[in-house]
Length: 306
Image (cartoon, rainbow, N blue to C red; front, side, top):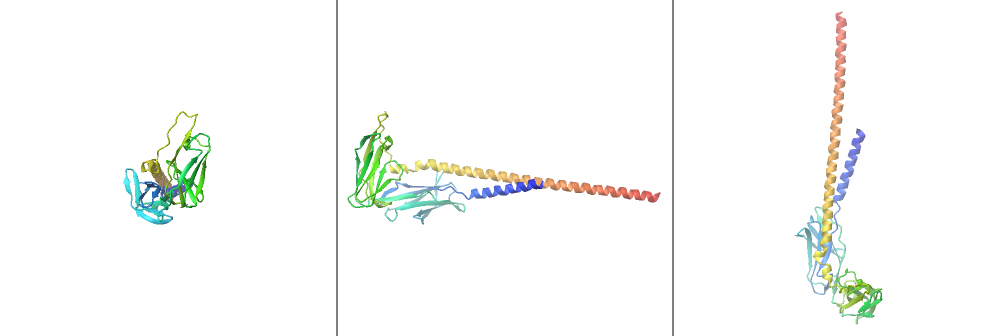
């Protein structure tokens, strides 16, 4: 019995520590910018941070330092804070992260958001060789040229992840692509830059058409813009998934608490039962000793009377 109780108590202690640990784990927030991660100089930008429904305070960090604080607003099931930058400049371009507080705990930082200020230098020119219309399997090269000497160039395809290709160069660089497939169809632009967060004006768009003779569908190039990529509605699925995950975590924690309470109740019942049995045995021994004493006295008194 003692060994069983000890095992139950150890198990209860383990579950208690598990619940305590899980309560300290907050899912990291989601961060995005509108209208885009590339902002023309002097234009405004809004940065959004979304945590769990229980979030009560948000902090925005710029290049590792606290930049702004904000209380959240509820948008349906979503708990979101909005940070406003009225005019984008090279001083506000850089890497942003956000965190949130739920009760007394702060979450881990979000993934980084790199904001770029554009329209700082001349306008580059973009060309494609052998031409804008190619067949699947060919090798294609984009050439970006800027009259003012720079040290870095970026090539972006509209509607894709905001992680552009980059090449180092002074006035012109080549971006080789290939062998191309229909997945390379789309509209491309290039920028010149002296660093990762301060870019030139965008080049004129160049549309690449890739024909696949084995493909009966000549689908047009995609028309999704960069701002659409970061639209609030497109992050809903990921946000709701994190909220569902947080709800599942709460359910699991409640289940662990119920199991812990049940084990404690079982341990108490075992202790009460053991105490009752001990008292019963003690009482039986006492009753037996009393009966023996009475019989002994009776025999003694009988002998005296004889």
